[in-house]
Image (cartoon, helix red, strand yellow):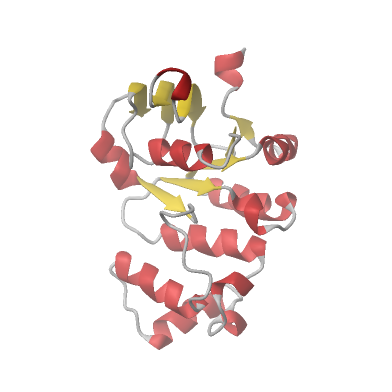
Length: 208
């Protein structure tokens, strides 16, 4: 699955919330997208996931402008204000909610079995804020992939939870090896680290 932004912008002129941006995300290694300021990672993620329309430019999925398909096939992962769970809710509660979105049984046993498989049973009753950063990225990504038809994950600002980028990048690279397209929308410093670790640079084609 490939997602392309071609001079996509939110707002117009000098006061635009997101000036025109061109980038490319595709299957293979996870793609790093460097975006600065507090607001723009959310806006880029929303464009990539088809949850927002660009005011100018184009957003393409596999070369076509099809917002409905983009929404069906992408999942926003831990995106602030949109897909970020309340920090005080229990991890088991988060998993049960995601199961309901995916049409899966939400019983305590089903939730616990899932957490056991992912080595997080001890965190079941604890607030989700207590889950270590690498486990958080891995678990939320796996939960998103339970939804039917998902071909791409948009991971938003994972650096805000701390942890070593090398550790959580390895978990995303393993998921990408299964054929899932992965975009990591992050700050410039973290993007540079991810690219050194083997991530694709979303802007490489457009800046060359």
